[in-house]
Amino acid sequence: MKAALIVNAGSGTGLDADVVERELRGAGAEVTSFELGDERAAATSAAERLVVAGGDGT
Image (tube, rainbow, N blue to C red):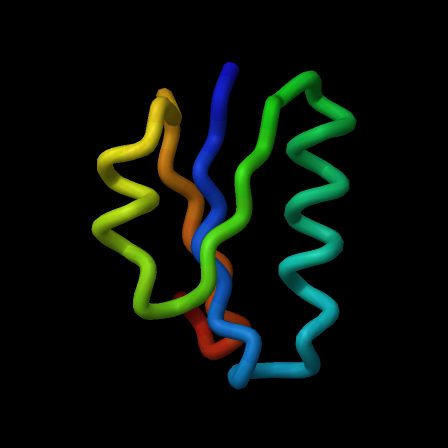
């Protein structure tokens, strides 16, 4: 599975995105990370799933 991961690095401790990415990869996902503001690029990427990690309850 190809996943697009959108992270808000300015929210929370900043560690959440690393944990989410590691877990996705551990489950066999091919992950491409995007910064907050790059939602359109993530949505139009070849990803089959869109994952959002905000650290603010997202």
